[in-house]
Image (tube, rainbow, N blue to C red; front, side, top):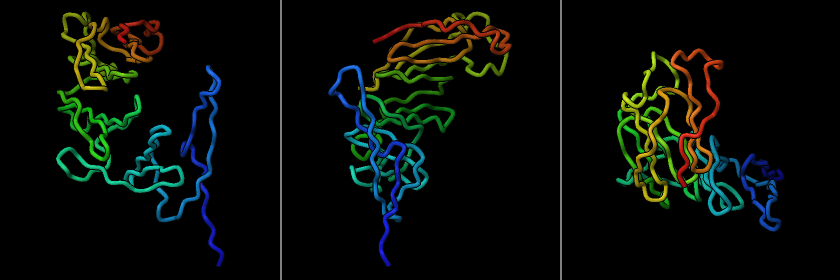
Length: 215
């Protein structure tokens, strides 16, 4: 019986950004033959042309330019793990934000095959991912407006901090001008879409206002 390779046209499998024409980019799709036992149950694909990883229920897989291969990853204590939190990719590195334990927040970075802790703190109310920093609000900031919000964010002790993805250093940022809303980061500029104290829905939202830009 003739052997037939199943061909998967990946939604990410491999893409290359062309730098031959400044200001423009080309995306190229690549077909990859995959033997059935090695086909990953892909949940999320992250990376670039240097390293591409697929995270899914069946484990972590690495793309070598021709196909996927299962890899083992570990905690900094040497125990094998899969994914210790919400993964994301910034500045050529793989990170995971662990908020599974509501009493703490951890930021980990993948070093080779080991997830190493970059930052750990108590619970955070919400966060936004910048280009080189991760921004957090804590101290009573309500991202979902589930309860009566404060009338004065400056007297309620709401703090904004950021963590550098390069070395894990912590920086105190400008205080939030509102007690509730949605945080966004564009590059390393943080924005807040604030809501009024009544949280009455879209009509209560203010225009997008810049809280601070740090670069």
